[in-house]
Image (cartoon, helix red, strand yellow):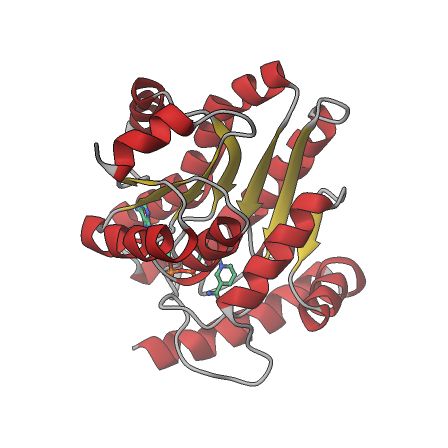
Length: 268
Ligand SMILES: NC(=O)c1ccc[n+]([C@@H]2O[C@H](COP(=O)([O-])OP(=O)(O)OC[C@H]3O[C@@H](n4cnc5c(N)ncnc54)[C@H](OP(=O)(O)O)[C@@H]3O)[C@@H](O)[C@H]2O)c1
């Protein structure tokens, strides 16, 4: 019997934690934290070898069952295929972490339109559909948790990363709405917004940059809390407060645009 099959038979009680984008960066760090707490895991990303390497490490270090499901979540049929795969394996999802995401960096006119659609589908569409697929069973059980990973870029328009910012604003607003809908159901819903975090998406060290483990700690704390939205780290909490609530939108947009324009020049 493989580790992948064992998880189906052991998926009782609180259920497994399903983490998308779990092969690197923040998703892998969240998987590590939850495995350390004894959670059975379902890990999703496109690169199956990288995903399986993370799973193998977690099985060995934490003695937990881990199922890997390689999928491109930007594909229209991916969330439904994921749900079917888990249903067939008898896996009950107790915690869903919608973390997979990508950015484009660059003016909209410079980005391949197909890439723009793909980003919106991955960062926003897949998050909403995956949530809708796993929520009903959580509501029926009267317990469960959904963490949607947004971004500080959700709090103000993001010129030169506009689709990314808009998709994260979608995630934040969607999650806040869902939080309200699910009050009193036993299902915990929360959006967690990291700021700049040192991962393959945002490589290199810089002052104030967070480590994926810190974001994962914030996710674990957010699961225990009650707020609909949490920002990782006090400096980013201050930043989102200022950009989202204090500055006029046009000023916040200009400052964010300057930041991403510099990033775009760096990427080129
Ligand atoms: N790093 C930051 O500064 C930062 C800041 C704010 C918010 N965030 C958010 O945090 C989340 C994680 O980002 P990260 O920095 O950890 O990025 P990362 O290291 O690039 O990891 C992204 C993860 O998502 C997976 N992924 C990418 N495209 C996918 C697709 N089409 N289908 C399925 N899986 C896919 C990747 O694996 P494969 O490539 O194998 O698919 C990988 O596991 C994202 O939602 C991101 O927007 C990051």
